[in-house]
Image 1 (cartoon, rainbow, N blue to C red):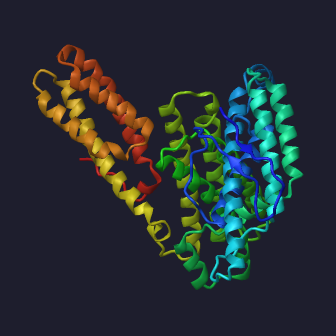
Image 2: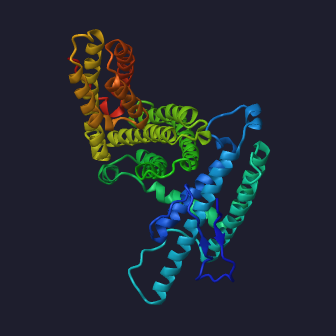
Image 3: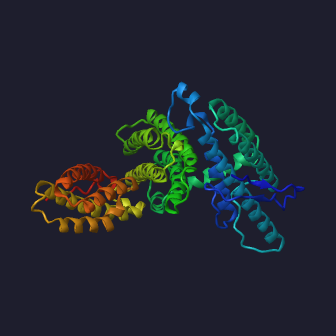
Length: 448
C-alpha cells in the first residue's frame, strides 16, 4: 500500500503542504466540500482514531490478557494506517479550501460562509506533518508483520501522545463534536422552541439532548458509508468513538437520576428508560455484532454486522428522542420527529404480512408435498424474492435467498420435505424477530 506523501517545501501559511494520496480501499476519493464540512469530517475521523488507539476499544470487545498477548494485531495496524491515509487526504483538501477562502477575502468577495472551527493554517500544517510521519512509521511497522500486543501498545501510546501535542487535533475534534450536538431533528427543535417548560426540565434537556444528537450524527456517517457501499472496516473507528459517547452519556444520565427529586416525573421515566435501553444495545452491538470484526475477511459478513450494529443503535436512540419529545408534547407522533420512521413502518408491515403468507405456504407444502402444487409455491417464492425480501437486513436476506434457491432447484419431493422443514423453522424465527421491531410496537399482527 502506497503512503500519503507530503512534498517538501518551505511552509507558507497561505499555501498548505501538498499531500499525494494513493487510492486505497479505506480512503476513497471524495467530492469537493467546503471548509466547515471538511473540518467536521476530519474531526470525526480523528476522534475515531483517538478512541481506537485506546487499548480498551481495540477490538470492541473485552479480551483476556492471555488472548490479547498472543493474537496477531496486524489488522488493527492496517485499520489505523488506512485512517491515517484518509485523514491526510482530508487535511490536503482542507488546506486547499482555507487557501481558496483567503484568496476570496483578498479579492473582496462577500457572503462567504463563516468558519465554524478555530484552526490556523500553521496548525493545519503541523497536523499534516504529524500525519505524514505517522503514515511512514505505520508502513514500516506493517512490513514487520505479524505484530503482537507489545508493538500495538507502544505504537498506540506513541501516536496518541504525538496527537495530543498537536493543537489542531484537539480543536478539530472539539469542533466536530459541537457540530454533532446540533444534529437534533427539526421536529424536536420546534417542540423545544414552542412548548413552555419548567426551568429544571429545560435545563436537563439542554444538557442531555446534545449528547444524543452527537451519537446520531456519528451514526449518520456510518449510514452514509452503508448507502454508498464504501469499505466498512474503517467504520470500526467511528464505532469506537460512539462507544465512548454512549458510556459518557449513560454516566451523566445515571448521575442525574440519583439527584432527581421526583421519581414520578415523566422526565425521570424517560431518562431511566434511555439509560436502560442504551446499556442493552451497547452489549448487543459491542459484545456480539462488532466483536472480532477487524479479523473478518468476508465482505458480505462485514456488511451484515455493520448494518445490524448501525440499525440497533440508530433505532434505539431515535426512539429515545421520540420519548423525550412525547414527555414535552404527548400528542406528538414518532414520524413527526423522524419522518423516515413512516417509511420503516410501512415497509415492516408489508414484510411481516408477506413473510407470514410465505411461511403458511411452506408449511402446507411440507405437510402435503404430493398434493401441493409446487409451481404455485415457486411463483410465490419468486415474487417474495423480488418484492418484500428487500426490506430484510442483509444477513437475513442472504439466508432466505439461499433457501429459496434450494427449493427452486430441488425436483425430488422426497428431498424437498427436509428443506421445507428447515426453511419453515427459519421463517418462523424470522417472523418473530420482525414482529419485535420497534416501529411495530403499536401495530400488533392480526393472525388469520
